[in-house]
Picture 1 (tube, rainbow over the protein chains, first blue to last red):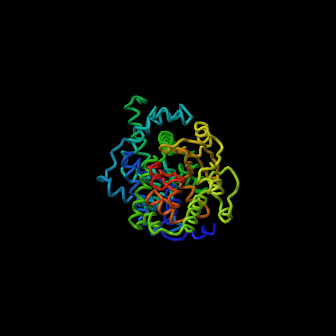
Picture 2: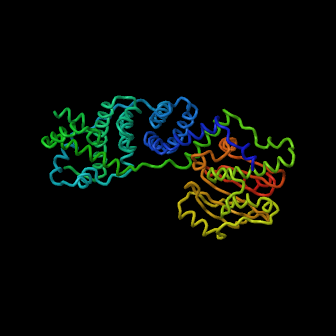
Picture 3: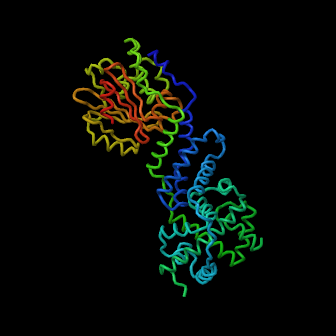
Length: 198
Length: 271
């Protein structure tokens, strides 16, 4: 079995790049896919976007600085791909009636102390489709932070690195994003007849 | 804290991003200010409903497969791989061939055995069909010995695989009859081993996840084998005409097939 020694692995070259890539980049696929899916609203587009992102990441693997946040690096690549391929004209925030839900909340708040009950009263039986549609209707900057924070569970620091904005901006976009979103959801719930505030 | 400041920190409060002193002032304010408290509760409800209604999804396997495929194509473009057959273009002498044949089996062992056993001449005497194959190589080649695996009931075998959730499954080979199979773990990674029979020739298949093979602490597979596998999906080795080993990749599973037939015959069973 001495011949086995002639079969020792030689180091360097492509298998190592593969191995590193497989170990470090591939495990983040779920989170990238989720983001792609929520941004594009279409599984096929999400598929293409993830594939493109990983291919670019593989091509530029030597540009990735070891030990830095790989997820943020992958996200940045994905964001650029997204902008190039899918971004339509920047939408202005829809005009939403913030008063409506605020008034309604004031009227029901003290009848119930259970948050589940409150949620039920305000948003009724909204389905995944409604929530997805509401998120998709958000202007991109707001949609991005809401997806990253509420669906992906990223920290503010990670989000700030990803969107390349200070943490203060992330914070205020989240607040405004959720505010627009809840007005939208309330609107849907009313239209579906889940809630009545007459 | 003023109402304006509280609104600015609202999302940070909800996402657990406030430090202790800010949290204290924030709480103090919303306890006293009904309007801010309502705003806070509404934002919390909004976050809750998003999280309840939209669970994070897993990327479908087709995405993973597509990513691996495009990376393999990319790697192939960067480093074209010489077809493994070239190794045998010149007819080497018999002794070298024998050595190469054994080394071929050694590649299998690299895949599945801990480093220490690589160095020993004889493989452990156990139920591992690859060890058994190796220890009885000549007998295996003349078909006088069939390595013994634990179970010859295919359905029981697949059930036991699914029970241990090892993500492996029984491969299907053309024109082959399932004889026996066993499942074991090496360094906590799952490995499945099978004996098939084609006419009277035994065919040994051994299966592991690519991830497990690649993330092992020690290099378990020769790098040129791994390179060929990742770029073309195939790796083949032959011992003259009577013994071949083929590694191939299906999605993220590595199959290693050893049989006493030539490469073309073996390829035909796998394609």
